[in-house]
Image (tube, rainbow, N blue to C red; front, side, top):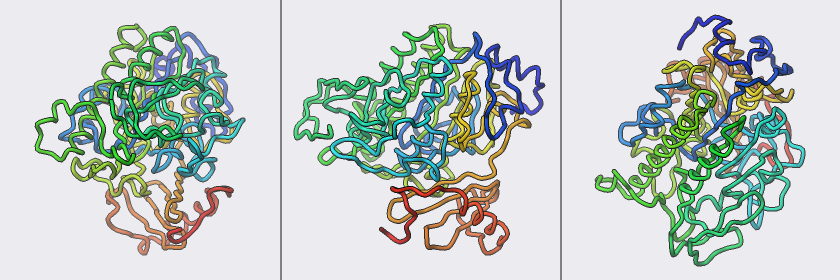
Length: 479
């Protein structure tokens, strides 16, 4: 990472549209600065993989699964080593991303089903990332998986700031890679897949598999970029790979072909997982090439990350490919393996090629960051901090989080805090565990007894980190 770029170079690298950003204004906790959008206001593409682990990419140490295009993104941009998802499962993680709030403040703090189809919807009037970017003059699109409001609810993408939507409203429906239908805005789009035993929530067993949903999402993303190349645009591409298909009768890692992995002496689910990730990598390459072909590559920031750690579903074992790398835990854990995720940011001529940063950041930082990059204004009540100084090579100007906080509510409530080098995890009603990530990234040794002053500080943070919620009360035990 280049440590000593000058202020002049920062402003030059940020482009004309960001020339009015003040470094102090970017880092103010209230984010009240407003910058004037200019001709170089960047397009923003945010790609969110589903259940992709910290160790699933070559640039994060993966040895067996091939990800050359994503690895090239890291070579041409910035790789984050200490970035965190909003939660350890789908819906709350995506809610944190959309609202700029951590799970002590978000409306959605867990996967809560709403019948007949969908999850707990975002309320009307929620301040969301696409709403903020729309106010800054952006065309906004979500292509892929939503999970924050089913059909007819207040939480649909079109009710929450997206001009265009194509994909799955319900994350349970998204478990099916050969669905009977998807949604385009609020309208159901029937597909050619023949589905037997279909249910009202859109799940069922596909007896004729013609249209693989990921391929449809990838094609739609390329089409959106081409149609909106004049910009500025915000594309949230929330793919479903490599989530497992958990529906009865078709469980597994569902992919049209195993490709280069067909002849490997691996269990079938592992061939499927590898093929899914490499298929996603292929489409990342297609997307990057599209930006170059359209001449908008240097005016587009592309970010790639995952919604939580690797799953243990569909017959796949995260240990087979060491999908969580050196980290402990997987999806549904608040240990590092459940919430620390890859993050790669690429913006040619703006982000230094080959940069690596240990800046501690989380999903709730994207809303204020994108607002500033877009020349807009972030809301005052965000938990996030603008990361523009880190992205643009001025780490000394970067404001740091006092702490990061998570809570999770399956089989009793759990909480976690990242505080500098320290990480704390506890089940409500249980003892607090403390780990020194600087010495013990795998969280193998609980050192709470050796550092009572750190435990006391974290207990103080835990006492102030959350607001009460009608749906998400803290509960002990296995309820």
